Image (cartoon, rainbow over all chains, first blue to last red; front, side, top):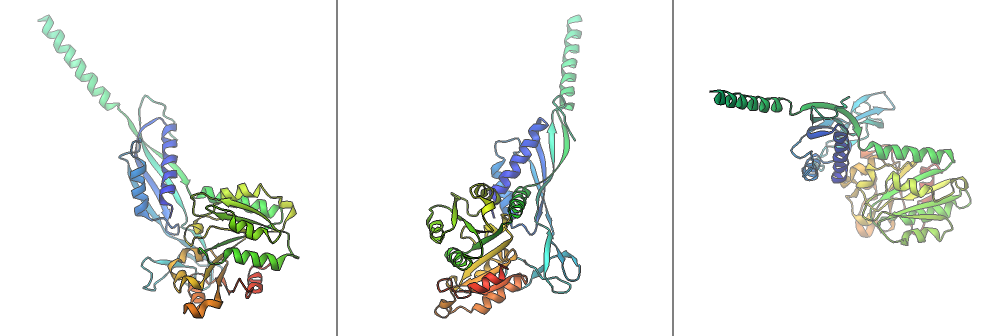
Amino acid sequence: MHEFSVTSQIVEAVLKEAKKHDAKKVVEVHLDIGKLTFLGLEQVRFSYEVLVKGTIMEGSKLYIKEKDGIVKCNGCGYEGDVKYEDDPIYHVPTPTLHCPKCGETVEIVGGRECTIRDVKLLIDKDGKTNAN
Amino acid sequence: MKQLLKEALQSRVISQVKDVVKAEEGEIFDIELDVDILEANRKLATENKELLKKNGVKAIDVMGAIGSGKTSLIEKLVQHLKGKYRMAAFKGDLTTTIDAELIARHGVAVVPINTGKECHLDANLVKKALKRINLKDMDLLFIENVGNLICPAEFPLGSDKRIVVVSVTEGPYMVVKHPFIFMDADVVVINKIDLAQAMEVDVNKLENDAKAINPKAKVVATNCRSGEGIPSVIKALQL
């Protein structure tokens, strides 16, 4: 949900960074999106195309890496993949908070991020290059 | 001859200049950012939590379906806990202060938060509301979220506990249709049980649906109008 407002924040953050480096164009944007955020990737892509129009991000390639949800078991110490509900009434794999190993309750420790990993910027050689 | 040579040299220089410009048009730099967009709200939520803890205030975030009984639940909890805690409430709604006034008539300070078009409360709005109350004068804060079983899940507010309220009048499928919000619930309230028979809704099934997603959640059946189940909610919240 809220893909549009989240993507808007992504575009804003990238434009801010591009301005810092005096970039001419943004060539690529690499995102990590956790499976336990409830962001629809298609909607993120669609919002992205809409939001970059008329900016130096127009034409840039958006790469999204889906990160698995990670849970930690308070009972047996298991740390790893989420157990998904396999009831056919759910059309999307629905995460549950049961430990896949021992069935006890788990805590979510990963998979809730929406991170701009890195961006590729086209920078004028004569411009300020503050690359870090 | 001299003229021809001059012209030839000139054209060569021009084409050379063109090539040089092309080669130096720009370079591609890979910049690492590592910026988590969702972290901003989580960070504010943590700040809210720390502020509340510093002042010894327990905060309960009440989420739930539209019309499920969130306000009624808070009203009943306030009535039951009057002698025990000094309480206040935040009431999130797109507009109007109707629910805020309902809670306020029980003698607690209420800060209405009108979100405008936003369909959920976020940590930033709660941070602003926290400035409007004297935290030193209270022990317990109820934060009633906007009626919505989808969006509030993504936005922690900094509360100690999260309640999700559903009622039998929404039919038998509300839990399975909205699994994500139940993942974050400490307590699940199934309200309006007095109408379960008329609605042909099996309260036990709703309870099992919630536990299948989140075995940690304590599920309590209530009738917030009569007050049935309220002591169990208080116990589940460890109040």
